[in-house]
Length: 194
Image (cartoon, rainbow, N blue to C red; front, side):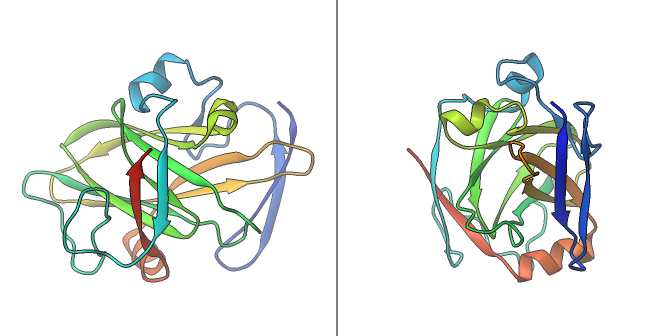
């Protein structure tokens, strides 16, 4: 697919470019939902989540823990996925997040989620939710993470629309300072499997 893309940087600068089908270097864009790499990283494509953003709660599955003071569990790494849709007007998109073939939760708009992973190579998937979205070749992004015990990783998920093109999903790693800043401006995601 060839087309134009644009996105706003954190400094409020509009950046544009061409999509050539080669990829953008911020996670691999997947050609089809049935690709072996997608199956290895994502969960079942028909599985969906109901998601809202709200205050962290002390207990309960599917509630992202508060960001303040959270550290990786003993012997594991902590991963935050932050859905940054601040420059996407009227967006109500859910991103499902998968690790090594299983969905671990979802985000919506300006929210985040976190989860622990074992040290070593992890295969992450961020996919737009819904039958039509999830089947788009640009609606799924894969990322490999070499997790180290005791470390925290911050991944920012964004969707970019180009003129006359379908949306592109990007996942980029941000450093701890940027990650904490993003977390301070977001609410934790609360999700439930449908």
